[in-house]
Image 1 (cartoon, one colour):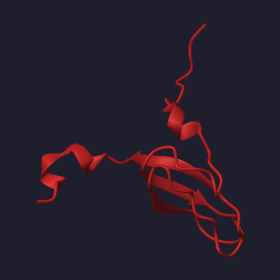
Image 2 (image 1 turned 180 degrees about the vertical axis):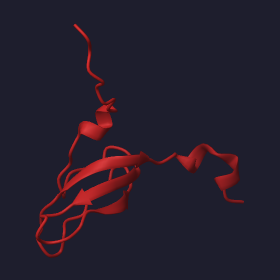
Image 3 (image 1 turned 120 degrees about the horizontal axis):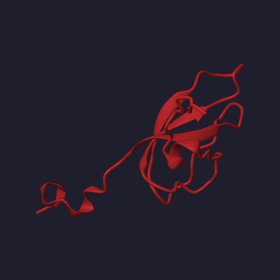
Image 4 (image 1 turned 30 degrees about the vertical axis):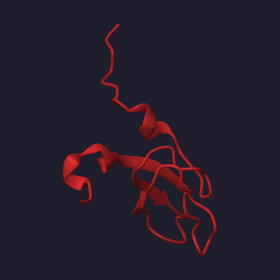
Length: 80
């Protein structure tokens, strides 16, 4: 039997988060609102903080778009 081309997904891309959840890793997330309310948007989120809540509908879901690097250990980003 022939295998059909299956899309390759990163496990993180399959996870959805809700406003108010703790951000699992820093990066850019796609915030999808109620379709009748607003278009999807991309937001930056920092690990350990809470995902924001939409001020208008109070709802939505978020998925990871791109990871962020932890710059704390990179010499160029050290102060002084």
